Structure formats: C-alpha cells, structure tokens
Length: 287
Ligand SMILES: C[S@@+](CC[C@H](N)C(=O)[O-])C[C@H]1O[C@@H](n2cnc3c(N)ncnc32)[C@H](O)[C@@H]1O
Image 1 (tube, rainbow, N blue to C red):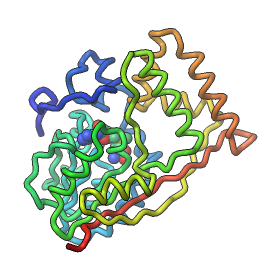
Image 2: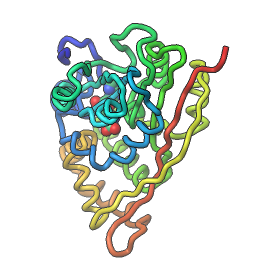
Image 3: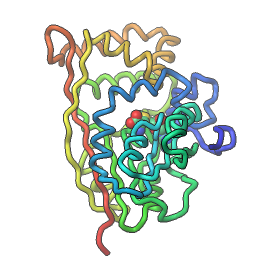
Image 4: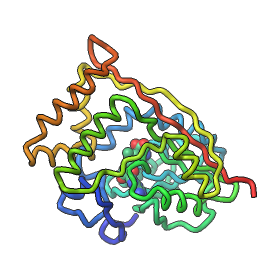
C-alpha cells in the first residue's frame, strides 16, 4: 500500500477536509477527521444490497472503489469474490486490510484515485461503488476508468442517493454554506441516483444500465441529536462545522438545519426521515 505523499493524488477544489488538516495539496483524506469507519453500521443495508445485486460468483475478481474500512469488500469476499479495494485514506485502508488479514490475506488494498487507477485494462469481473463516487470531481473520468479496468463481460454496480429528501436538503445547506465561507466553488456533490443522469453518463461510455430504488430510514431522539451524532463521526460534516465555527456562523447554520429537519419530521415523538437510494448495474452495450 502506498502513502498519500508518494501517491501523486491531487485535491479537488472543494477539499474541506484537507483544508482543515493543513494539507490542501493532497487528496481528501476521509480518515483524518471524524471517525468515518463508524458509519458502516448506518450504511450496512446499502452495502448488503449492492453486494447482493452484484451476484458475485466464486472466484470472480471484485474491485471496491472508495472502500473506506473495507466492510463491503468483506461482504464481497464472503460471497466468493477475490477482492481489491481502493481509497484516498491511508488510515481507513489500513483498517480495511486488518479485517482481511486472517481470513483473506490475498485481498489487496491500494491508495488510489478512481479516476487514475494502478490496474491493467480488463482486470476485474465486477466493480462496486457504495456512495463514494458521488463525492468526486469528475464523473466522466471515474466511469471511463472503471470501464477500462472492467473485463469485457463485467458489470459495474453502484449506488447513490435519489435526493429530494430532508437529509439531502440539510446536506446542501451545510456544504454550500461552507463553500461560501471558505471562498471555494460549490461542492460538486451529485447523487448518482438520478436515472436520466446515470443513463447519460454510463451510456456515453458504452454501457446499458438498470436501476432500482430502495427505501432507507434515519431515526434519532431528535433532529438536533441526529445532526450532532453525524457531526461527531462524518469527516465532511466535521470539516464543514470547523469552517463555520471559525467564521462564527455554526450555531445559526445548525439551527437552520434543525428547522429544515423538524419541518419534515415523520415522527412527532422523536425524529424520523425517510429517504431513497438507487442501486444501478451497468453492463456493456452489445456491439
Ligand atoms: C462516502 S464514503 C463511502 C465509503 C464506503 N464505500 C461506504 O459505503 O461507506 C466515500 C469514500 O470514498 C473515498 N473516495 C472518495 N473519492 C474517491 C476517489 N476519487 N478515489 C478513491 N476513493 C475515493 C473516500 O476516501 C471515502 O472513504
């Protein structure tokens, strides 16, 4: 596994995390703020759905892009896949590797950008992306690279949010306010869950797609408790809060975000927000 220093990765323009660790010239490292590995519990149903949808067969080679702490790569290995994971974060990759050491020592984890991967053409039967690429700067480059490393009959299985829900609304407020405070251009967050956009993106790279929508629920004792809980562990939320705190607008932005959630709360005794994610499968168009 390489190190961030020698990886040649470049930070995208919105790199709030790098900004706050004083390393704006390196790739956004989701391992240096918050505790991103803890998110696995909240995203478990999504990781399972993606791996189930991929229908991995014994011995197939599987690449997990944006693998974080390797939790879905582990599900892929348990399904019979020979697994490789890439991520921007050395700390998260080390965590991922430690989960595989005993049971799957042949699994590989690499510090790499999905838009520039250190793998030969036609290397993998399956590429999976669980809510990772939606944070990237260049969607076309990501799809082109996944297409390059995919074997001719292979499949890309990805997931993204469908948007339009209360959580999407507060994420937009949080990230747009932070970009403004830092004088950065708008965060390029895209959902990868909107079918027309995905058909265009993958279609241009020679793929047919099929997408399915799945429900998910976020619950907490209150709207504020949900936001504060996420803020303790999520690196992007941490970076945003630190920027807003420094600018003296954290409390007012949090209150605005709480109001948005409360207005759309589905449980009067606590807090509940429903949202949807989409899982897509891309396969090459017949030539
Ligand atoms: C929202 S997280 C998703 C992680 C994991 N797949 C999951 O479901 O929890 C995004 C992850 O992708 C990584 N990541 C983001 N952009 C990336 C890129 N261009 N290349 C490689 N990894 C990337 C981040 O470091 C982070 O661990």
